[in-house]
Image (cartoon, rainbow, N blue to C red; front, top):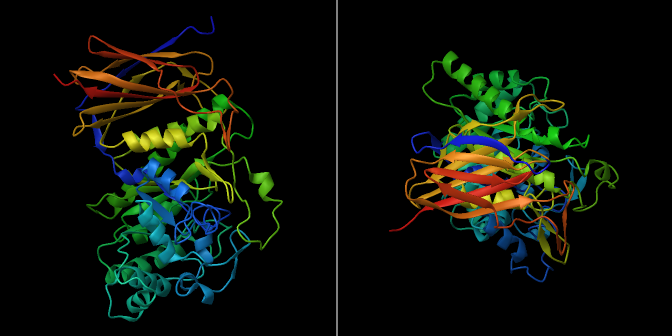
Length: 506
């Protein structure tokens, strides 16, 4: 019988704490790429544009997601970017050939404008410096421009541009994907490690309070992974706070069961980087832990062929505009679960990207903004996944796919918010044909009751959302109930779920 349920079990206990979740794990990313900036966050002629040219409809959706930090300005673009081109009077700013994506960059949005946008969107900024074509000097000067109070050349230049108070940007990326042959200014691990160390040293002299992210491998398939991490950390371990991870997944073969298992690859990637960091820690007899910044992650493959047809040197063409399917949303939910289960080490993460470019939010130039399928697991996990991550003890039936063995049908994460007296279970059911009936032992949460059970489900794995046509959206009719210290959750076949419990007031 097709609708027969599959049984699974889970134990959730207050004492099984992984760590406090850093809210920045729900961060995102804006690069000067495609319509992310021009036509995405910035469109002065749009009906909702504010006096600075920012689309208020987009800002409203970013606020809805409660995005805590946004990485900027790249990405590949930063490796040949002169930040000075994007400050000062707009009429004096040069147009440049942007080499990463072979477009023309008008520089009408730069550092100060982006800081204005971030303030309007209630988010912080993670700023990247160019270690491709530039290095120590440009990085320290940008930091002085952004963070120094005044009385020096670069800080007074900022003031002359109308920004009296410093931006006080706390988190900085030491370049981007410097191992990649596609990168302008690609480095060997030794070259990057030395440059990143010296740049970090200079930046910390300018502002000792900043946090720094050292470049990890561009993805786990790089031929130098994880030796890149080991060799670069030999140089940067004591000056960096984080090492970056980047990973995108696709379903080019149309194998849904295999695609939904790809979060297991992400799990292995994280574990390998943690092991490499801890090896260097032991080798250096260090007392500090290296934390992880998973500052690019998403599904990305739908638009690859279309992007090959774009004429070079145009302004803000529609690049990397993946239209996401229902199954993409389920994998995004599982990727978020994976990071929460590693919240003791993954402290920052950035869904790449935020608007138009492989993004949860899409816009029409001059028209509406709308939500992609992946918006929803991101939204619910960001809003309700605040607090302490608990380690779920899971017993689930498993399956094998083309690339993975022993894939659990049940993929959960659990968050406890003591202040709100709230327990939240996020769960993907990877079973394509059968519901999962999950017995969840929640006896340590005596007096809690189910507040809501949100379900994202669809009969069509390839269903998409389009402007004015939201085919994939969650409903609140999930089936779950408490029975003698057990939470019984019925997770429909091929679905993403959130069950929220709260302490019942006497």
